[in-house]
Length: 545
Image (cartoon, rainbow, N blue to C red):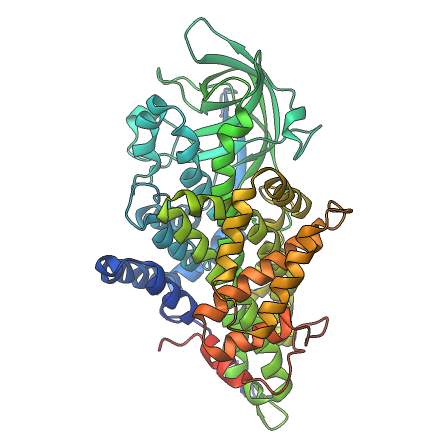
């Protein structure tokens, strides 16, 4: 029976059927800035293809289905044999397969590989963030494995392969594989040096049997894992395959999957080892040093993943306000709503510009850029991931009650938002890591200061913030208790420097006035009213130029 009580009006059309990459001006400009000219056209086409797919109705539906149908653990087969397998919805496999085919596990061996992969990761994970974990772990395992040339030669071609092969088989029988990671344990969490998992050496060089547990094991359906365990020589890194070369299953008991706040489509498990075969990666007793490059690479993905969530939240908020009318006009033209949207857009653009700058530093491969990354990665990881949750929450509010409803997609973004702040070390861990670098690696601080100093003299508020930061750096009194304050200031100065150099004047002016000049309230939407807010909002609108 047809409804006769009312007609549907003033509802916003879905944001679908658009190029996610082309519609993001901050990202497209960053890609053009950091890529070598001879490769720009090729990479642009890659990213446009990925952007059109990410914005399509089909891929958006895949994301919804993967989120609504979380993975299931199958510990035994019908006959009672232990199998420890994780079942995923077909849409999750489609998302992951498309991402692997697009090169999102391959950055280390391609020219400009990190910029093109970071941009692709930022575009593609806007469809659904849950499958980003195995992409990140697989990509990040490469530098750790390179500490052992033999292992790298065996595994790297499969890790960077554009072929996604689901199902557990010996790695030698697969063209492409996925990797996970197991570091934390019940008693230690982030304090991995308190790990109790034991590694007993076998007669064959580099082979061990592991006994113990992992409280958080990322992507437990993967083909292999990098894990930490206590060998006779101390905490050591190991490569643990799920299937042994002879085709038998390694001992890898998945006790349960975590019931998480967000990231629902991804599996995170608790696993037990009991005589589990593994190969040593690096030297005994140097496990943290061996795996730290993997950690650093995944921290960059935390920044990028948060930037992706921010961008999708801003895109949805601006799109909604472009079409929704209230009190005699469309919301985007209302001065107060425009202030909110502009403030959100600033946060999103600053995160995007910073993520791509870090990726470009990886591609440069110089000692100076490596020194810069030593401080810039944990600094960015601390601040960008911290800003994600309140920013996404404010964007949800722009949609009003519609944003609070699951069908809008905004609740999924909000549940996902805290993840990257926790994953690979929460806020305190990042802040203390920055302090460690400041105290032990003065060349890293010099590289950081050289980077922010490139914009010196361009904006008096940035100059003042740099001066204040230097004053804080010179004062070691109570430095640990002040670590968050210091790292926040460092992140804002770095973002301000990048925006002053590369963003449109209205964006840089608004960022410096609010984040560095102090002309800002405690909530979003409190920018100085005299700024060019309309241009900032228009720049963030998800319509391809």
